[in-house]
Amino acid sequence: RFWASIDDFLEQGIGVCVMKGDEIASLCYSACVVDDLAEIDIVTQKEYRGIGLAAAAAQSFMTECVRREI
Image (cartoon, rainbow, N blue to C red; front, top):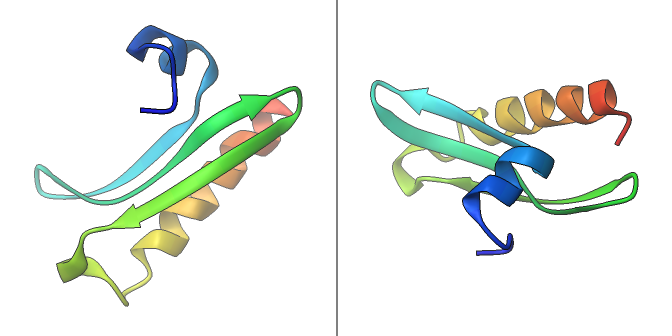
C-alpha cells in the first residue's frame, strides 16, 4: 500500500518474512526507502507473538539494509 506498484517495491524495497509452514508468521518490510534511509513496518500474526519472530525478521531486515548501505 505504500509503494506505487509491486514492481516498484521489488526494485527498491526490502521485505523479510518468517514462515510457519506455508503461512507468514511475521513480516518486516520497508514502507519506503529514500536516499539512504528506510522506514520499516513489522507485523506478527497474533498467534505467533511473544516468541521472538519479529526480532528475527527485523535482524534479517537490518542485515539486508547494511548490505545495501541503507
